[in-house]
Image: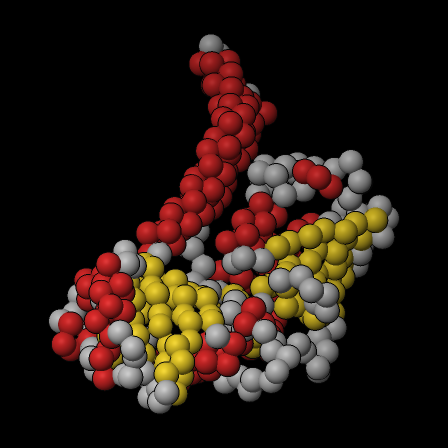
Length: 379
């Protein structure tokens, strides 16, 4: 169908497009596919005669046809080129991630578009496997710590059990030691089991207000259930930007931080106060907003701060030291971050950062092109 256009040498151009070892589509001025080379036919698992003549929109996901496709074509025709990624749709219903390189083509009848497509699904799978391997490496590093954590209770239980076996007189302190260390082992194993089975977050762009409304009441109940006073400093003007989060997983990170906050009060009788607020991040970082939890406890020594998120690190007797490790891991997998600031004698602030919606404007807003616009502003 390419020869419908008034090109000087349509057969030569068609031959060149066929021998290029890439999937190529030629689109006319009404956004219709007028030529698909053999590589494109193979990529889309379609008959050539059905692919040619069909609207370009058919190879895009339904949710991307109105905005993303429109913007890609507008950028290409206005700026001469476009490069970016998009999930593409085959006639058989399957889909794949494609890297698109588009260039405008000037005909007498108007401006057409030539699109080169590379299937980058395998590359995306490799990225996913790398993230998965990072998680496995993290769990592997924990194994050394686990062996140390288990060794001491096991030695204690074994030692006192052997002593009791040699005497007919019960030793209450030995029995209590066995009970205590057994309970510690049980808590340790339950904590590890919970950590290993931690679901991967299913991220979605959500309004900050929605998150606050769905999690603050639970956090307040948790704090008050442990005898702490909850002070909400939530502003009526919350950040309007959407953030990437899985509410069911994010709440667990915040719960771990709140538990850490009321554990910061070491002396009985001290009023436990926990402050909570959300603030925007105004710099050019990838973060949209920050959820902050503050205690007025004894604070943390500077020498200890670098270890605060390490597995099994704790300064308190009877604690496993995995709460902030949980929070740190959850925030990493939510593409966020967690930070700590502490002053001895004044208290500690833990800040949980959430990412901006990764979908760029090109996928969410129809663009109005001006002379000053650049492709990279949208791609």
